[in-house]
Structure formats: structure tokens, C-alpha cells
Amino acid sequence: MRCPNCGHENPEGTLFCEECDWRIDQAVRMKLGVNSVYLAYISLALGAVAAIASFAGFGIAGVPLGAVGMFLGGYCLTAVRMSGIKGRVKTTLMVMVAVAIILSILGFIYGLTVL
Ligand SMILES: [Zn+2]
Image 1 (spheres, rainbow, N blue to C red):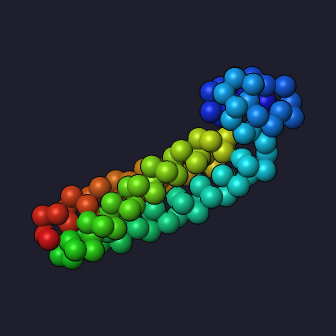
Image 2 (cartoon, protein in one colour; image 1 turned 135 degrees about the horizontal axis):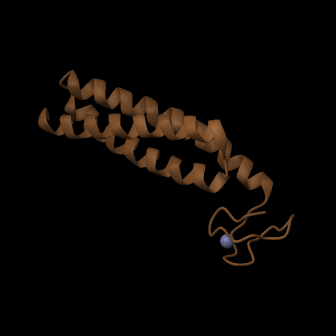
Image 3 (cartoon, rainbow, N blue to C red; image 1 turned 120 degrees about the vertical axis):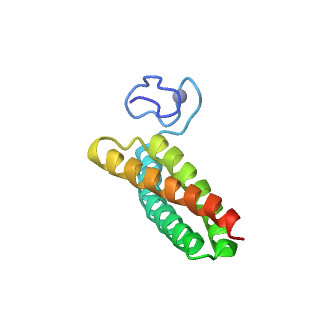
């Protein structure tokens, strides 16, 4: 199987990548995959709340929520990449996270102007 960290092709059933020692067993990847779905939903919710709060004039809430949304969104992208998710699920997650990050940035920046 291909290492999700460095791309090295390992023999089937390998627990650790021969090239970079990355743990690549299926259980870990499954867990990362599930986590990345939760993270995508949470960052999307945070981004939406941050944007709404800031545009409603509550920069005091929008700025920190936007910051957390951006951080979680970035972390989620890493989790998706490491989990080895492919195809339509990956595309859906990527779109969700992209929207989440954009909303978070909007909420963060606009929130600063209404603090
Ligand atoms: Zn590797």
C-alpha cells in the first residue's frame, strides 16, 4: 500500500512505512477518516456562526470563532490527506472545508472591523 505521508509504495499489510516510519494501518486511517468528517462539520458550523456573528456586529464572538474555524479547517485538510480518503467523499469534504475556511476568514476579518 502507498504511504499517505511520503507516497512510498510498501508491501501489503505493512504497519509502518519503510521510508518514513509513518503508521499506515487501516484502523488508524479509518479513525482519521471519521475524525475528518466530524472536523469538517464542526469547522463549517464555526465558520458559519463566525460570519453571522461578525456581520451582525458581534466581532467579539466572530473573531475568536473565525480563528478556531480556520485552525480546525486546516487541521481537517491534513486529516483528510493522511486518512487516504479518495473519490467523491474526499471532494465533498474538501468543498466543505474550503467553505468553512472562507466563512471563518470572512468572520475573522469582518469581526476585527466591528470589534
Ligand atoms: Zn512514508
